[in-house]
Image (cartoon, rainbow, N blue to C red):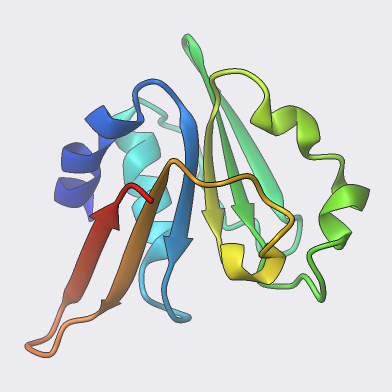
Length: 128
């Protein structure tokens, strides 16, 4: 994932919203950890599964990592007060965006992770 993060990072230099799609255990959080490491973050990177949001202040940049797996309905986003996250030039990495379909702005990028038939991971990356 470190190599993938290094290749993807230039696309995210201006910030924006990235939807990370894939089954449980596909490597979404591992990719986020790798991206943060590539950006120079040396601290602990934990999954936001229970808190839903983890934010990281990096020199000249803010990164927000959301894990929406536990949402029952996209309307729950309104209670989290995340609207301000989408203002500005922060990089927003969202796992399980389909849980909030219709309640999130259009993503700038989509990353799809899945098991490759030959083993390892298959990664698709596109701009919608």
